Length: 307
Image (tube, rainbow, N blue to C red; front, top):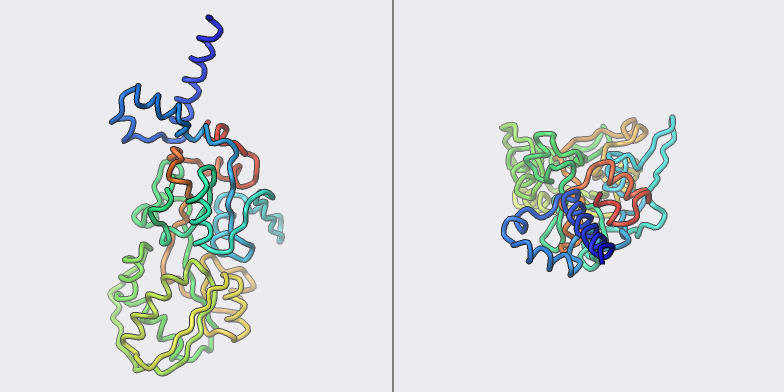
């Protein structure tokens, strides 16, 4: 009988520790009685009971993947070479919406998306005890942040570049902030030029939703302009801008050295990368070290990640 009691005490202590390590749910802890919390644990509502971690990543060429892997140390640089050590068993999704849907429907999954695309179908965890918010990104306290770049050739026609002039005006930067990104209002005013150009923009699927809002506002001031937006990934956008198949390329990451040599670029906003889990997962916080180990396959069980 004593052995059984010790076993039960050990299980309770282990479950309590997992809730503390994963941040717990402070609101629920404050509101619920010990008996209610015990019932939740019996139902397997804590992260430690979810079993194997199902890692969800983006495809190669995604700016979100490039930024996330570099910031977390999943991407390792060896001289001029870069090695992406993303877990071989990770489920690779080709869009932000696909990552959201997968995590929404899988209690044991974890993924990452643009902060501006975060919605209430999933839950964003804190990183190093800091929430993914525009305020924390602007303050520099949230570690997973990246630039939204628009790149173009140096000799680009002024009609094409006028869209960037609008984006960097106070009106354009206000739209960026309204969409959940970090803007940089400088007092610049925009004056419409009655633009009649046909502008093709290609690149990041993370930047595209913001660009659509900006393009809509720009067309309201320049009714004759035509704007086509192609969402095909940051690397594809940079290639299109270099080859001239698009006048503007979108990248949700820093430009690579060869891209910087061929293109000029403007940071139109800053974005955070939200680490997301299923809403039923009680994990509230993960460290950068834990993220690196999860996304390289070194941590494969929620019970281990919760320590």
